[in-house]
Amino acid sequence: MITRRSFVAASAGLAMSALAAIPGHAQETVKVGLILPMTGPFASTGRQVEAGVRTYMAMHGDTVAGKKIELVVRDDASTADQTRRIAQELVVNEGVNVLGGFGLTPLALAVAPVINQAKIPAVVMAAATSSITEQSDYYVRSSFTLPQASVPVGTWAAENGLKRVVTLVSDYGPGIDAETWFTKEFTAKGGEIVEAVRVPLQNPDFAPYLQRVRDADPDAIFVFLPSGVGSLFMKQFADRGLAEAGIKLIATGDVTDDDLLNDMGQPALGAITGHHYSAAHDSPENKAYVEAFKSAHNGMRPNFMSVGGYDGMHLIYAALEKTGGDATGEALIEAMKGLSWTSPRGPITIDPQTRDIVQNIYMREVKEADGELYNVEFATYEAVKDPAKAEASGQ
Ligand code: DHB
Picture 1 (cartoon, rainbow, N blue to C red):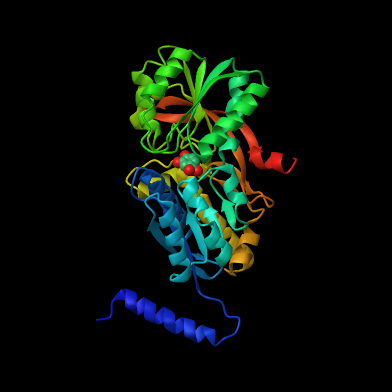
Picture 2: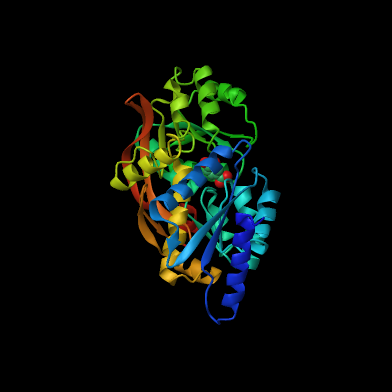
């Protein structure tokens, strides 16, 4: 029996050998390998990024510059060894032209040796530690960086009467970035950090830390936790009576993730966050995106991870258009540098020097509208570059 798969494989083989006889004739399919945590504690990141990628393809078709885009999605279960092994397998056996995804910083970092050797781009759609893009010339980022989101929160806090703040972050790359850059900005503008708490990435229990925070009696607590962990934090924040004690919650938008916000309920109301995407962002591009995303995913609300996937896919499509369909790694990475477009989050650019994203950071407040909770934007810091890189390059 000829299965569809073996038929496709056989015709692809035939096509390949036929094309091999014609010098310079390019391959007709461009393969994109997505590696994401689809199971385990960070599965919500994988689910959102994949849904963003698929929404992009549903809205823009699967053909670019005459090439058919083929998506291969693999689960690394949030384990860096798996991410590297899968990346190798996708390059060697599947012949992917581009890699994408990467739900956590250690998972993104694990593929550096693979992309250096294969010389193909890795589009970082989720992970957000500043230094990732410095570890290989083949990384390009469509998500955000923690310094980028945290500095505006520090500015806002200092300018809005907060004096004494405790920081609480996950103890790994993005958490350290958030703590460092919030602190730098807030203290430069006159604020004081009363205590800096770091909690484990895996299975954190916030209760003992929150008791300490309550005892320190600060004006506010600044928090970074990776996507998916915010609900547990919010519950313990409420249970320990921090809001009643008058301690304000300020954070990066990872904590009030749009995917989980409705389940957080009342304790989330009034939280002030800085981030690059809200499902409530008021623009025609975002309205179209939210509608297409929800209708294709059983009403699921897109969060900031999903736009990393959506825009990551746009980056690949736009680069292919620019190269006229040349999908070799060097051509694609060069074409990605300096691209600008209007995303559902607002205007974005890939910095040609750093391969990192330049974007607006919005200040938002959790509010209720039509019986749902939203991150409602009230101020915009425009075209924010990753401050960690701006400093490194003396800008
Ligand atoms: C990272 C993971 C997250 O879930 C997030 O919200 C931000 C950063 C990371 O590991 O880089």
